[in-house]
Amino acid sequence: MLRVLVKLILLFIWFSSPFLYANNQNNNIMGPLWLSSSPEFQDLKNDLEIAKNIGINAVTIDVWWGAVEKSADQSFDWSYYDKVFNLIESKDLKIIPIMSFHQCGGNVGDDCNIKLPKWIWSHFKNIENKTLMYKSEQGNYSKEYISLWADTLIMSQYIEFMQAFKNHFKHKAHLFDEINISMGPAGELRYPSYNSHDNNSGYPTRGSVQSYGKLAVEDFQQNMKQKYHTIKQLNEAWEQKYTKFNHIKPPEDMAQFISKGKHLNTQFGKDYFSWYHQALIDHGTRILQAADIAFNDTFSDIQLGYKVAGIHWLMAKNGHLNRAAEIASGIIPANLASTNSGLSYQKAISIAKKGKTVNRQVVLHFTCLEMSDNPTAPAYSKAQTLVNWISKEANKQNVIIKGENALAAGILNNHGWNNIETAFEQGIYSGLTILRLNNTRSKIVQKRYAEFIKK
Image 1 (cartoon, rainbow, N blue to C red):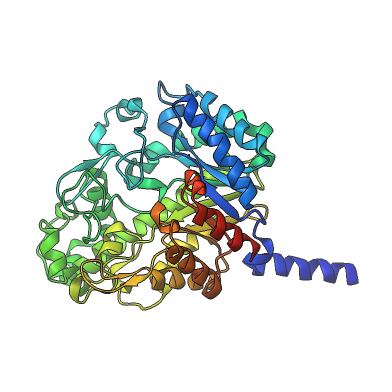
Image 2: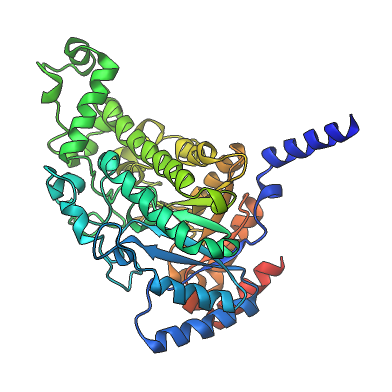
């Protein structure tokens, strides 16, 4: 009886505390995006040696879909990763592979240009290539990441890629502390709302809404049909005169729509951005479930991870643009934008809980730990506040959370490291991943990360 009681207590501890079951290998660093020359591989060797001496445990490596399966469907070339993984293993470091279903290039800090596999755009019969892309309110198309509204078509491709990775590297399963899953541009759970395909939509603007493509519009129409059942009931709620559900369109002038606060104070706006947000959450849930299916057998007890971007600007902006950048990214719903807590990130964080299994934990990664609040123009940023909100909400949901710096320059000064340490002192972060491996050459990084690890 006593033995049974002890087992029950241990099981309760295991499932109730993210810190007791969090992996001990929590001092991580991002590896290079891509290496293309012998001198770069030599630099990798040297940087790995420094990382090991600092006390770093594991290196994250982007495993680019567009590089491995570049030539044709189910034609995989793992030779580059054989070489890189062997080098990391030789330095007695662990590896955190990132299933990078996004392109490299077009985001801050990208120093390589690896597009999605060219064949994917013509792979599906009777489907135009633009149908697979996000289309923005500006009418522009993004090729950085397949639109989530094409998940029914593309998910099998993601599963095939992950299974091929598992089959090729099953002999190295002991090296993988975690496998991170790309859920959007830059590998983050978000829409490409502030990416380079649109004009004047980057930091620190509100960004650009990305739900104007054919599949997105059809999904919104279907979603509203499920909610209201009849066009009469929809018209009463929206004060409109539609005759058919397939006549419903996104706002023609989104800039004006948001500037007038219609995303907050009209039923149409509330419905639209509630659907927009939920579509992103559903995508994150689907792709995490796909990873769990693909990474079975020898990979079944390896943690999975995903990243949420720290979209901290416009958080302190007064008026209808308050938190508009986060809303356009899809990561928070418009109806919770005024919430002064992590509640607006509740669903984004809960994806980790949905993906958790008896054998496998799911880790949430959150960026911008090195940043301070700067609630004045033009950024109206509350980065440090957001970092604290997220950690508290993750703790509330019993989700393991690791932190990152958003910009490489953020760890090249003591101020950035002070903010990181404050986040760990005040929050619930269980690990740190710094950007990027070549920054270990900095004396400040060597000193501060080593001190951080000792703490």
